[in-house]
Image 1: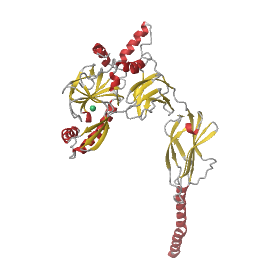
Image 2: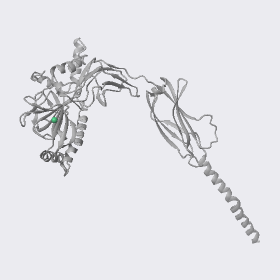
Image 3: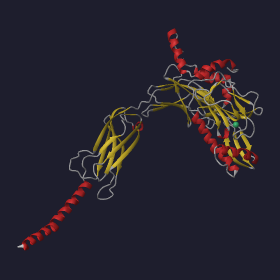
Length: 501
Ligand SMILES: [Zn+2]
C-alpha cells in the first residue's frame, strides 16, 4: 500500500513544479512591475526656506519627490496673480526604458525677474505641476501637486541724493549725502565696477547716509556715479548723482630696469614672503610688479573695510615738508629692460624725496591700521582717518608705531628708505578712499577739502547737535561720548598743532 502514497507524493511534486512555481513567478513579476511602475501617491513638492514675500528678483528653490520608481515625465512651475498666469519654468524628462525616466528627486532653483514678466504686486500663488511615468489607481483631475501662497512686493526702498553737485576729476574724491528708506538693507555708491559703502548714523536723522567715494583713475570721464539701494527681497533702485567729471591726461613715464636693480631688489622681496627667488630675475621682477602688486592691493582693499565711523582729520592733510615730488599720482609707467618694454603699471601715489632716512610724519590724525611688509611698498604704515579715508607710507626704513596706535597730525611714524620696489630713498605716499587710491593733491588742499568734504559733512546736524534745550543737549553729549572712540578724544588736544586746520 506504499505505492499510492508514493503516487500521491509524485502528484504533489508535479503540482508544485508545474502550477505553483509559475504562479509564484507571475506573482513575483507582478510585484516587481507594481514596485517599478505604480505610484503610491502624488509627487511631493516643498518650498525651501520660508519665502512668502518676494521682490522684483524672486528666488525660489523647489524640491520635488516622485512617489514611485518610474520618475518624472514633466514638471512645470507657474505663478498665478490677479487672475493671470505667468509661466515660470517647464521641463520634460525622456523615458530611458519601459520603466520611465528614473528621475525621482529634483531640486529646482528659480531666479525670476518678476518686473520683466510684469507680475502685478499683491497676493499670488506659486503652483507646482508634475506628471510621472508611473501608473496609479487613484484619480488625478489636475497635474497640480502643490500651491504656495506668496506676496509680490516690487516697490524698491526710497533713494534720494541730497548732495547737489559733485565736481570731480578722474582720480578724485567726493562726498555723497543721501536719504534712504527704512526697508533698505544694502546701499552703496557705484562708480563703474567700484563700490563705496554708505554709512548711516553719522547724521542725527537716521535716514540720511553718507559715502566718501572716488572716480578711480582707470575709468573714463564718462563714468556715472550712482546711488544703489536695495531691500532684502531683491527690489533695487539706481539713482544717478549730479556729477561732472573732468577728464585728465596722466603722464607717461618710462623707467629703466637695470641688472643691478634686479640683483638688489628681487631676492629680498621673495625671501620676505618665504619664497625662493627665481634664477631669471627679470621674470621674478614681473612676478613682483604684477602678481605681488595685485595681492598687496587686495590686502589694502581688505584692511580698509574697517574704518572709524567719523572723521578724525581736522582741516587739510599734510604733505611731507621739504620734499621734492619725484613721481605723480596716476603716472602711466612703462618699464624697459634693455631696449624692450617689459611691463606697464600705473603709479597710484606720490613719490616724495628728502634726505636719506628723513622723518615721516602722519598726514593727519588717525589710527594705525597696518604696519609691516607689503610687497612692492616694502615696509609700510597705513593710517585710518575715518569715514573710509586712509593714507599709506611706503618704502620705509623704520617704523615707530604699532597697529591700533592713535597718532596725531605731524607725529613721526617712521623714516624714509628704499624697501620694496624703490630704486632710491623716498617716501611713497598714497591716499585711499575705501581702498581705492585717489589723488592726494586734493586732500592736501584746504580749500578743496572745505568745499568738497567739510561743507557736505556739515549739511545736516549730527547726533546731539539738533537739540537746543539743556536736557536734550546733555543727552546728546552723552550719546556723542559713547559714539566717539578714545582716538578722537585725544585728537582734540592736537588740534592747535595742525598748521592746515
Ligand atoms: Zn611710488
